[in-house]
Length: 133
Image 1 (cartoon, helix red, strand yellow):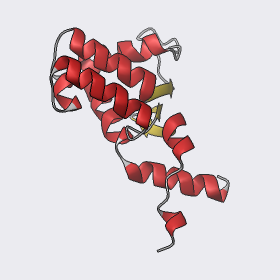
Image 2: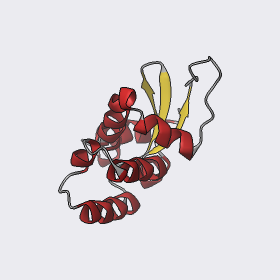
Image 3: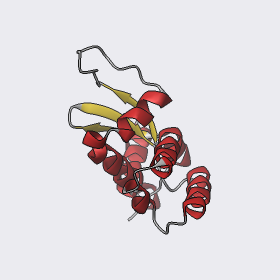
């Protein structure tokens, strides 16, 4: 296998790739970036947890801190999300945090964490970038 078929572009990892999720489009960056790993490590030490997924079960400020971290490093944007009244939701960091904090959307945070750790998605995006798609 040629290496170019399995390489990951660090620019894509930092800027994110678009992912379809339940009729929406989410811009998700890689959890393997140095900036995210450092910020996550500091948060985990502060909250005294050994895995990021442990924070998802917290009900306090620790969970909010994780969601803010995710909204600034992993969940970089969205499209095709509407408010309950049918109006398009504006893509802002505050709105991304609100989506992640909504207990009825807990699956969204889990999906973003999984997607951000899915190296294959970034390999495919790199292949598409090389091919000019």
